[in-house]
Length: 272
Image (cartoon, rainbow, N blue to C red):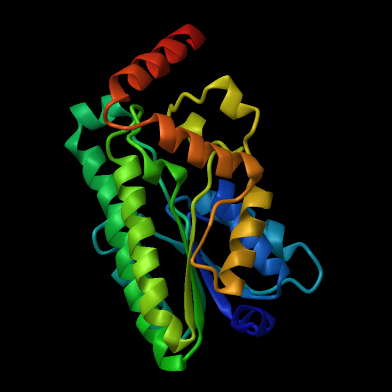
């Protein structure tokens, strides 16, 4: 009931990674619910496109752009300082920005690993605590973090994506338990594949079977945001997402990792 009551109140929502894909869908979904927005990304041109798309509709909420490179170690502090300086109380926080580093990039470039940790671990953690403290003081607020079903199994395509997404899931579960007594909900979205440019942009191979079951970003965003307003601890959207989570977790484990890796790269090479 708490989530439904809070969803009816007009709040300011801050969404990271809002310039494309799932983050853009999150921003547009929350805007349709009447909440003002602060949309965050390093890509100002795409943020302006999203802002114009939202503001082109009748009775659109206010949309503010914040250009920020979330790979920076101090990005979270700068985002929070911006909101404090402009006296904007953020009542909804959506941590959606993400990157998928392929194993070849990880092995040859330590900077890639640093970027993943800064984005998935440091930025998410700091944003949750900085804005979460303010929400606790006001006795209301909603936080949605985006993890992945890759948090549940060793992935031969990337050595840091799954582990950092597992951290997001664990952090969200801890915050959900700790803060629910303060009327602040923390929800973790753990999607399977989503039909966005994310995989192509990060040069990630997706097997044909999984490509046919990809969920639209709009559907995924709606499920995640509904779960957030309900105060759920975690949600894995879609029947296929739930099936992938169970099935892949069953077959991909340390004992089967060499076989899974061989099969994955065999399929990837044949598709090239």
